[in-house]
Amino acid sequence: MSMCKAGGYSDSSDEDGEEEDGDGGGDADPYPNSNPNPNPNPDPHPDPNPEFPAKARLVRAATAVLRTPEPFDKARLSAAIHEGWTADRLHDAPEELRDACERLGGDALCAAPDAPARPVAPETDAAAMRDKVRKIRQGNRKGLLHSVAHAESYAIDLMWDLIARFGRDADPELPLSFYDDFAEAAAEEARHFLAWCDRLDAIGAPYGSMATHDGLWESASRTAGDLAARLSVVHCVHEARGLDTYGSSRAKLERCGDVESIAVLERNVAEEVHHVRKGVKWLKFLAEAGGEDAGELFRRALNEHFEGGLKPPFNVELRDAAGMPRAWYMADEKPQAQA
Image 1 (tube, rainbow, N blue to C red):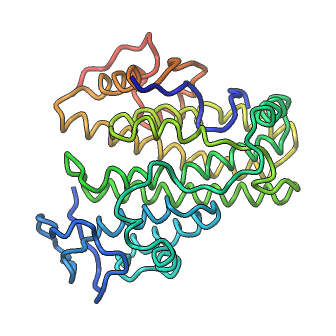
Image 2 (image 1 turned 90 degrees about the vertical axis):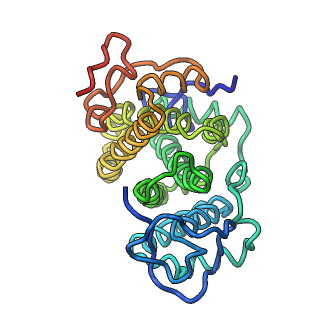
């Protein structure tokens, strides 16, 4: 049984601190679909090249992000892909995407990698990480912001991996709104990452100057074969944990008098609520498609893939805003009858 350890969506262990598929016109596809079968569903906006429908293009674009090692390049590429996707212009590949695809080669885009490409970190030893966690617990602002920025950099990969890994041959078939939701979330995570990097530059601790690790990918690796488990563990546990730590992070920044970072945190948390909401929404979709209760599906995923159990304190207000039923994470709450 594959298990993930309990913990937040951060590189610190500190708990204080049904639409149709369509795309616009174009003469050639820069990253052709590995599955040459045209979309069998009727399309109100037919693609001029039906062998390369919109979903397939986004899947391959998502794979390009995963195979791009530099976090800043991932962020810029994410923004370009989302802009092209929302404008129905992904067939006319943005320059950033075209360059990435040419650099990687077509074969590299045919499948999601086991793990995303990442830069080689100069410091990943256990002693350096323990020192970083200790400093965060003591209220060290640089350590806190670097930890949050690192989590956001991995969140970019996690959002695109949902599309690249589970969007190819989804069963049940995922509607276009699934791709919309997580392309949007990836672009927002990219914006969060860049905003935190700006703050790190401003305080003299640029991203990459402190110890990091790849433990944030562990949950994704453990749930690579199960979309319901991925949504449960990554989005409804780890991302929701990020909502729980909002208050303690804000308090630390207030003690530092860092009003600029507080402003970034406030802007980001509203979008993070929506990211958790997306996880809840699509977990419920899978449960309904399989004739299951969503709460039971969530609990089974945790039993099979998550170690340590859910631990308070919970930010009930933000979890409520994300549409997460309290019975999913609070033992004394009883599930409400379905209308």
